[in-house]
Image 1 (tube, rainbow, N blue to C red):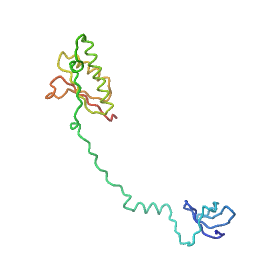
Image 2 (cartoon, rainbow, N blue to C red):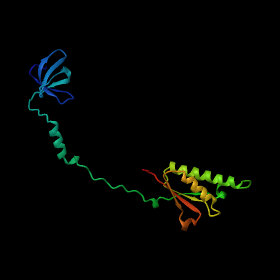
Image 3 (spheres, rainbow, N blue to C red):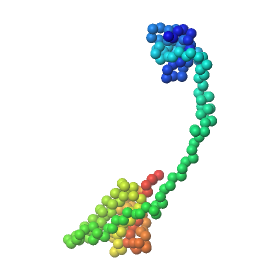
Length: 182
């Protein structure tokens, strides 16, 4: 039973005070800071010993700063694979690789099919975050190579270079897709 003059603590709050008045449902307490606050009687608990010490915010903060567990741990270095370690996606644009027979196809039909294939594969690589794509266009007269340069020039965040000469000769183009543009 809580009576006038008792020292009480508020449940779920860090408030301690002396009881000034008690009604049927409420208790009026004077906090240690000198404020009068009213609480429901079921929200307070009588403290038997007045030896309860409630630390201030500054004391708690100072103690936490001194604890070793709150010191920052050193960051682990992130190990990223080198771009050369990831194999490049290869797209062979030779017309014989794209259709079973080119019978009845005009030069315009063939280059349109090759460019559509190149665009579709590049869009796929961008969606799947594949960093490098090699387009094998062959040597020929250079029409497809120039059309590919024009097509790739419309994309942002890609870099174009000649393919590996040892592997593809002069008939390939390598596209680097920049994953994190700034």
